[in-house]
Image (cartoon, rainbow, N blue to C red; front, top):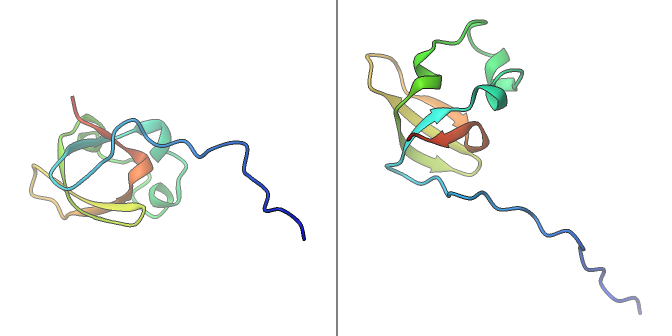
Length: 85
């Protein structure tokens, strides 16, 4: 019987785990060219890149973000978000 192969490259974990209540902004490099960007306005609003937005909910690889403006909440991939500082 063959031995199970061990994966020599462990998966990289993000330095900071994004969780509910964290203030975030969108990483421009990760967002531009993504499926989410192509499904939205061709020119995204600057406030998403400046932040802060509050992460309201996390489900799988996506997070619901509420901006401090009178605009609807949005769902974005967690890999496109970074902690606001």
